[in-house]
Image (cartoon, rainbow, N blue to C red):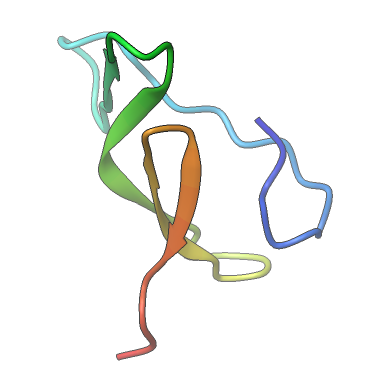
Length: 62
């Protein structure tokens, strides 16, 4: 997916349980998806967000 901040970086989330880090993708009955845990870019733009039910929810700065 493209980073939702607009930096145009392609983000790759591993879904293979035996590799780390690993995300879990859930498909909901309404056709939306959720990604768990959050995505936190430690380099580049530094975006930190949740992808829940097809929507980006930004994490608050710490």
